Length: 289
Image (tube, rainbow, N blue to C red; front, side, top):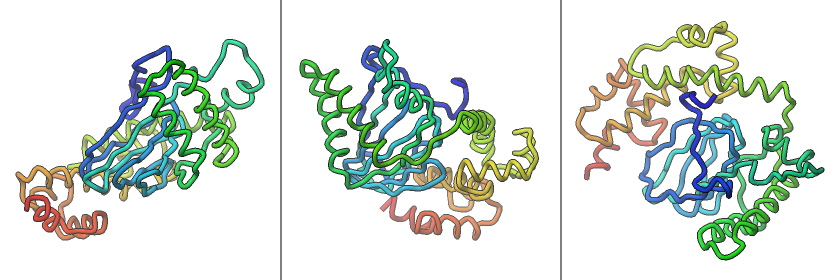
């Protein structure tokens, strides 16, 4: 699993703590994290700017004080919508919450949570108790006063209780979980292929052959996983590549369209304006004023 392209695995800076918090700031408009997934539960807490987070096939607009919960084994991505985006990433290793003594809490809640059988809602806003937990966890992590490890652990437990009581989305069976992980592994090759071949013609038949399943089954599972048809997903990747070219400023609009797999310049311009609310030429003029 860990050698898959969209699988992301970053070691905890302190393996004895099992929690990692880091700040991302000054993200420019259009900067994006590609779709990826990981085994640990992860939180994004936004303190400034605006962004779109895609998670579990849905898009969530976020702003200051928004919290995104990324469940384990959940495909997600992020795109900045402003030039001043700032957010904290909180990574939680499930082993941090476990004890050597197996008890009711571990059996009933923590083990199913670590195995991704309990899925929470992705977007959380306007909850003062949760906001207090998050800000306290961040403050304790950076202040490192005596006992901060205990404080972080206690507030993460508190956070989990609040999520369990208010934001459970679904309980997955073992069979559903196995199917989900298997699809992530299989479709990882598809995402990698699209990312590497966006400038060429890509057909659904090509992609279904790579996945070794029928075209009908491929289209159904792909839509379930991404929330998009293959055409819409491929166009989205191509438009993101086009945005990168426009930011560099060394190619004209026609060259960019062709380099990104669009053989019809008008179609490219219409799609770009639909997705970014501005034409490619206007975007370039604004960018390089």
